[in-house]
Image (cartoon, rainbow, N blue to C red):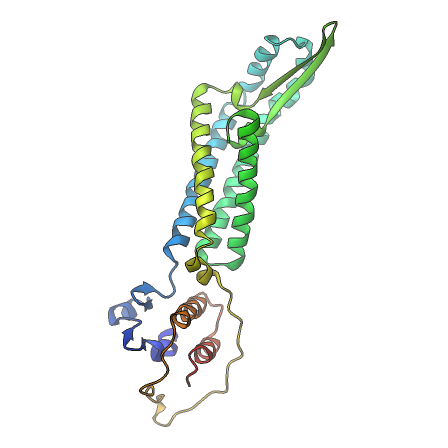
Length: 281
């Protein structure tokens, strides 16, 4: 069992790594922090990604809810422009489908972000790499929308356009998706999108902290040593005056325990890795 293998590492240099109450609950501790638990920075990062994902889903629902009226608003804006109104005949199929496509892309982005948050919360090394990549792409889309449509919302990069020529020259019409929605949507979606940009930047910084690096650090799978049998059925007591483990060794020990709890290390592999780390029998 975990705590049988962890028993000899329970006290280091007189410091209690796991209190009796903690052991009864099955939660190992290191200097008052959970050995197998997540750093606070990782927990906050996963929570922020979840909040942003929920906001994306709400935005997708709002865009889909107003999709039916979008073509009529495009027609009104086209009639008010200098472009030939007959251009709407070619524009109508695109205007009818665009809001649904934008809502679908936003919903997929939300579901992907929820999956990444779960992966980060579970401590998967690849989850952090994917999180940085996905956040980078999301921020690029937000900056594009902010620069082109004045809003960082995903829907800001969706638009329809048309042009016509007459004696005065070529006339161009461009209608961004948010501009054809009610002001309440534009303000709410734009405000949340700004919050999402800041939140995702914070997530990137949190996942780069040293505590997160230790949490996501991969540990090589070590081959178990030959089984050792002790007379009387119990291992000898730790030798007094043994070398004092460093703080880094304690941090690495916490990673080993966390991987053992997730099933990435067997009991034998955990014991072998702990013995190699601490340099003891």
